[in-house]
Image 1: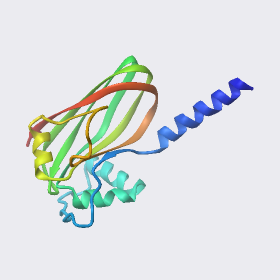
Image 2: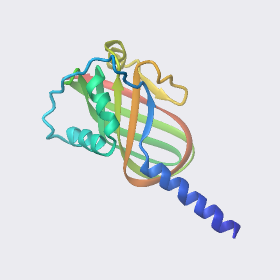
Image 3: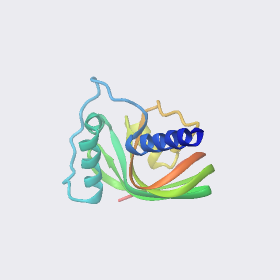
Image 4: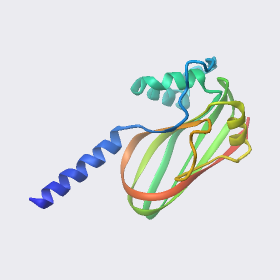
Length: 175
């Protein structure tokens, strides 16, 4: 009986983690000015944006009000004890494409499995985006996301069991 309760609880936790988007950070307010997008909605990046907006309509305001954002359509992650993830994406400033970015993540702790997911990083203002472009932006367990940044992830496929500590490093390459 105790074993069934533990298994049921474990399955519940895994299910909740797989269906919910992960969010951290800045939240746009009514006084933030909307930004016009120049996306044509044909690339994999634009498909991911459409997917985020369809499944989580509250993100539309982030696209409208953010000064810029980075979209990583597919990040591949795997780990057994030590884990790593990598993905590439596109960076937009005031709705226009300005370059590409790569994301590298290293984690350590209890983990097993592999997964792919999408990630979007929103930048509230020019200063925050400039920090990202200069390579001064890192997301980690001790990161202060309230300084003009909001990060959302959406699981695509795979199964990953983890209780880890780690961080993400971003590199920007202008177009």
